[in-house]
Length: 331
Ligand SMILES: [Zn+2]
Image 1 (cartoon, rainbow, N blue to C red):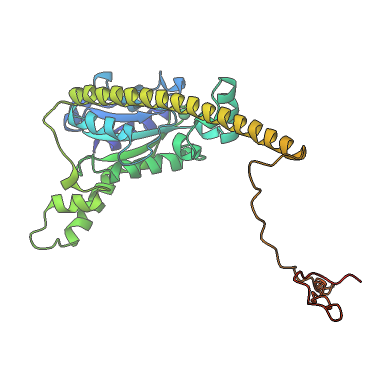
Image 2: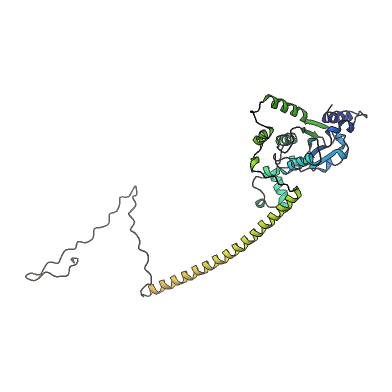
């Protein structure tokens, strides 16, 4: 019997009243410590890790609201990867629970509650369902989380990833995903798929990654040092942001001055118009308007402007010379 098989067996036997039911951790030294991700619900505090029957010293407990994994490279995945690499966790188990309030919370309710806390919608990310990872089924949520962990390039292919659901009232465990079986299926699939000659497991990993390994730099610095460097960069970005804000302020002042000049120009134009009305010579000529051709209307005929009056030379007086001036004939 393997660790999770023994845990489920002992849990179910204990619930049927078997007083001798229990786990002998020493028999599973190769599978311990175990890494568990659970919800933050305080009702789980007295249940974990007792319902699993394993000692606290062998229980690496990660928690978040709704035991949610949002992606194969998410922050929680980083913690799971470090729990394996730094704390030598041997198996991973995602444990959902019944009556999860994160599951019951609708987006409208959540926004309403955030609003009462002074958190406004406009300052939140656009896709809230994706950001908060809200779900409507505790079971489905565990299946999704297991899938992300199993497919993550951060988790070794020999680490079993299980999915459980615990009843917060009875303490009964339901085994939703058998991580051992998934490993066996994966290894048999890999055995049947022949890799290209010369292809290595690194090549296979490259295909799974959403980025190119060649583009990644793996510095010698420790994670803590990297965090300190990141803080330095953030500090510099903040400095640039402050400068940008200052420049924006100057731009605002400039815009105000331009506005002031525009006002002065309007005053000047008004003055010019007043002078023009008084009969004085205007200082500026209004722009020449182009004559617009009449628009055709379906019901009305196009009006044709009357022709200009004929300009005939005045009849010369009899016996006299023709007049030099010419003009329209008075009728
Ligand atoms: Zn919960």
